[in-house]
Amino acid sequence: MYAINWDVWLPLCILASSLLPGLLIFFLPEERVVMRTLLNLGGASLKLVLVGILIWGVFNGHHYEFRFSLLPGLDLVLRADALSLLFVALSAVLWLITTVYAIGYLEGSPHRSRFFGFFSLCVTATVGVALAGNLMTFLLFFEMLTLVTYPLIVHRGTQEARRAGRIYLAYTVAGGTSLLVGTVWLYGLAGSLEFTSQGFVADLVTGHRVELVIIFVLLIAGVGVKAALLPLHGWLPQAMVAAAPVSALLHAVAVVKAGAFGIVRVVYDVYGIDFAVSLGVALPLAILAAVTILYGSVRALFQDDLKRRLAFSTVSQVSYIVLGTAIVGPVAAVGGLVHLVHQGVMKITLFFCAGNLAETLGVHKISEMDGVGRRMPWTMAAFTIGAFGMIGAPPMAGFISKWYLGLGALEAGQGWVVPVLVGSSLLNAAYFLPVLYRAWFKVPAASWPAERSFGRVETSLALLLPPLITAFLSLLLGLLASAPFSPLQWVRFIITLEYVP
View 1 (cartoon, one colour):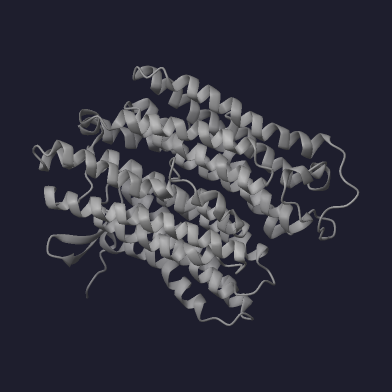
View 2 (view 1 turned 90 degrees about the vertical axis):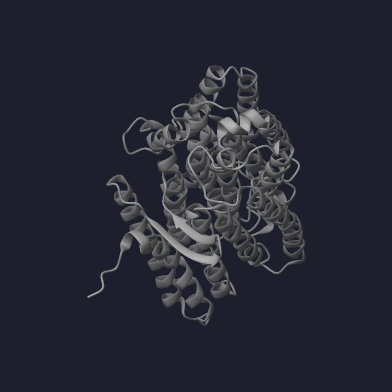
């Protein structure tokens, strides 16, 4: 009897756990609420279990890889390595929580089967990006992510949503073109696109220094669009017209994180950090990340719309990941990579809370938030934890990220980074603390813009529980950072692989 080789098929099963439910959901009539909910939660739960098995297997020395030949010399490769597990685990956990939130948020709204179908395909593409074992596989899933996210942004069908969708496509298709050109050009020089620890370019390409610099720029520009690097960030604030679950998905799990993850892959597993330094491309990337950090924070100061303020905060915060990657030092790299997880958990908390305010009270603007903490104390408590985490207050998860980034910068002789981190933290405080002051200390208005009653609870439990869970997680990620099972310890393991030949 033929035995299934799970070391080969498990990565594909993890992909299928969201792909198959998503395809089935498309064909469900709108009134099939129970079946759609079962498919959503069943697929998300199964993915989480399979990812847990994957992590356990990697700890025990299993090598998981699925390979399928697309063209001679070009394979579709799904591979579980230490870096991919970090992103896959984040996606699996936050997808399940976001699914619960989305079910409550979209209750009674039209076109739910279409929404949840593309929602599942979006997660499928994200997991494909995470598990990609070579640059070609990464490119395929990265572009799939562009296509399946567009219907989520324009889901509401308003003129504003359609305009945001067009802007999103303009940016991301241009970025995809840049990534494609860079990938094809690099394959022509190297004859391989396989991700390897410490990179493959230096081992396979002799000379061609100018071409390799241009290819690096093309690749970073391609993934940098989704990472919202300056000046490629313009689509992100516009996309905030989408529903709160989509905003949460864009900022914490899928698109923006896929872009940041792509930059990490290019620097570490395509070029290799040492070769990137020798080419002279690491420092300009670090400077661009620093400028983006400060720019996003300054722009956030002037936004009255809560989701737009959070969007510019994301522009700033995601570049911490890029900064840690480009500083060139193991300690800074730990700070950047662990922020992939920390920022995701904190930012999804903030967007969940913004969605709760909009759905329960009709509050969309910061100027409408006077006294909202008295009406929705649990929601605003979760928001407060997320905000202090973004500021970097100890013992929150954000403090851990910034601590390692600062120490790593000093260790690498890049002292100029420390004032950037301090300035960014002060700006974070400047755009989050006034929101908290309004919510907790100002007298509420006589009525809210569009209040809905949920009895004795402040809002639907399906909307309230997700931000409470993620707020608790963001606190634990800081308090238990030194625990053996924490993301910080796993990132240390990843960096050991990347910096020790």
